[in-house]
Picture 1 (cartoon, rainbow, N blue to C red):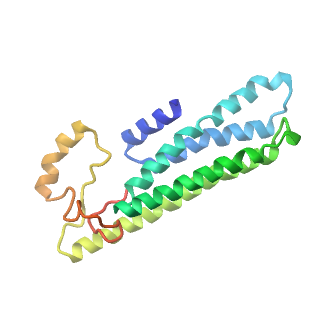
Picture 2: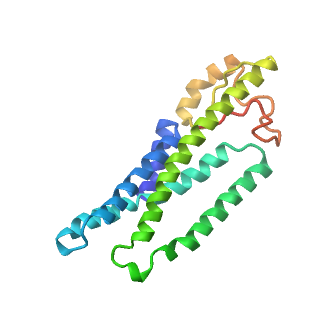
Picture 3: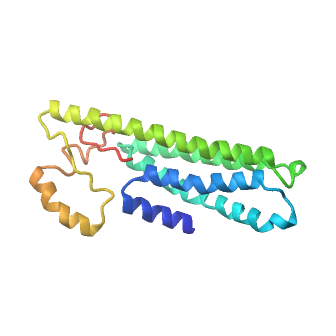
Length: 199
């Protein structure tokens, strides 16, 4: 709960979800390494407990992935399909995950911990790749806007607080920026040159 609320607050404060996703993966990676490396004896109980608590940062990751996906997907049908795929993937992971931790491997659970470590590292790598791809798409949209005689740079206000929106309102209206011509069309993000991807 703390990781979820803290992650959401930090993503809003920094206005960057990808960075917060990566930061939320670091404590579980540290925790898994602690559980894999430290001896499972009474004298290291406190250390192992700290490692276990570090792993419990993971619930903050899922809400950010869902919201990041939703914000970077334009078009009602496309957004629903994308969210459906995420939900199916998460459900499959919830079914497969417990089977990686077999009683025969107790108390180390090496196979399950290695799999989780690989997945947290994969999240970091995929987040970095997605960030690069999103920046490429933003550049393509800027080129499309210029070709259509529009302003290349649009101001994205989706991660702003109400106070910042009030301050930015005059600037956005003055620049003729804001939501764009296709804001209320059911157009996919790739076809809408005014769509701004977030990272």
